[in-house]
Length: 485
Ligand SMILES: Cc1cc2nc3c(=O)[nH]c(=O)nc-3n(C[C@H](O)[C@H](O)[C@H](O)COP(=O)(O)OP(=O)(O)OC[C@H]3O[C@@H](n4cnc5c(N)ncnc54)[C@H](O)[C@@H]3O)c2cc1C
Image (cartoon, rainbow, N blue to C red; front, side, top):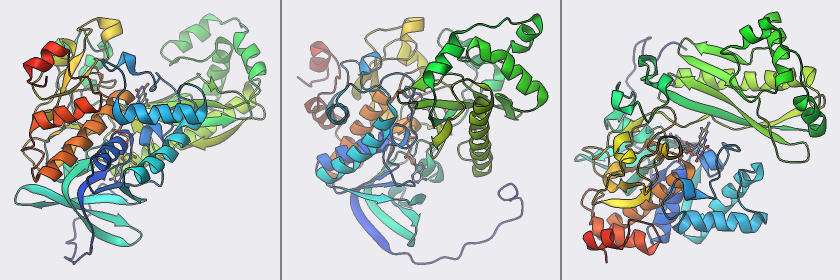
């Protein structure tokens, strides 16, 4: 294939397609944001359809297997007041099923997918899995549904409200909503963003990763190796400068150098001049010889570019296999280890977002800005490192409303908040995305029920509904100020 469009274009013949669904709320993408949006809309009594390109639910807390990082069961670091509503219900049920607190164990990802289906049944959400959302349907300047491609061919879905939870703003982009792909150089970000990310080359910056599991590791043997020490020569130290992305135990470093110099294996590679891939040495051990890890790929990753996407998927999967082979050949404890599974897609932390009716800035998050259309209070990501307002910032309803277009709400990673690699507003963290999803689903359901649109929805009605679900919108004085008490 050549660059899309470079071979010319064709006119696709017009055709009639069946209307397969007519619903109140259609949620596109059953990842973190979309799952909670659909469950919330269903719980509010809306006729709800949830669709995804995969067969399992949960996105980055489901099949994409984020098995590292901070706890999503303990949301104290990212949400004022902690988890509430459906997020709390799902985590409570997960912990009950598992018998221990949620902690990024690999089997939690399957439990999330299972609970997603179970809760969808309970709240009357219809699932349409293994389908791709294609073009939106727009009538009189308002989105009224979308086309979906699946094994049955192309069908139409009519919806009073469409929720784009694809994380990559697929539907919003195709509808012509303004998209923020590159963060403008902004010196005022300096205290909040790690210095290298302020360089011009990082204007279009995305921070992604592909997770995998390795089985049959003799972890005692590996730990003994990792705890040992070898002598590093000056040449080793010189070679290592800029080549240790972290987590590799010291005795492994000369082995990495030898493999690099012989051409056997390279733990870091430039996949494109502005796209860098790096393996990490941190194997999180879950017991019984099972460990989780991920390879990061950072830089100018264009989520809307299917050719680049395909190249990166292939390169990452090849690299992961070769990484495990390298470990098997050289690292004590890995002799009999094997690659058990790789997540079905590489997810992103940064990436594009819509321009919203209000786009939340880093400064607003940092200074604890309040908005009259607050849905809940979130904590900006820099708090432990950079200070800022410890009581968090408001998440405004306008942040999920695309600028200028009605009938559509955008939730999850695609909502309107400024990010650069790791998102310094703190909105991208899993607990925040779960809550944002639920708030979006409630808004969509209320608008559909009232015969309103997302833009004409009575925000006080939304806020009352959120308070009933236990969302934290502010202290008593603030609630009185907003006439919510
Ligand atoms: C490497 C990495 C590390 C992370 N680390 C942390 C961490 O430490 N702590 C933390 O709290 N969070 C972490 N996250 C979470 C992250 O930061 C995201 O913000 C979060 O996953 C976004 O959720 P989402 O619902 O928007 O996207 P996703 O969970 O990715 O869901 C998107 C869904 O949409 C579906 N979809 C997309 N396009 C289409 C289409 N056209 N048709 C049909 N379906 C479609 C996908 O299949 C998927 O199910 C990490 C993520 C990554 C990738």
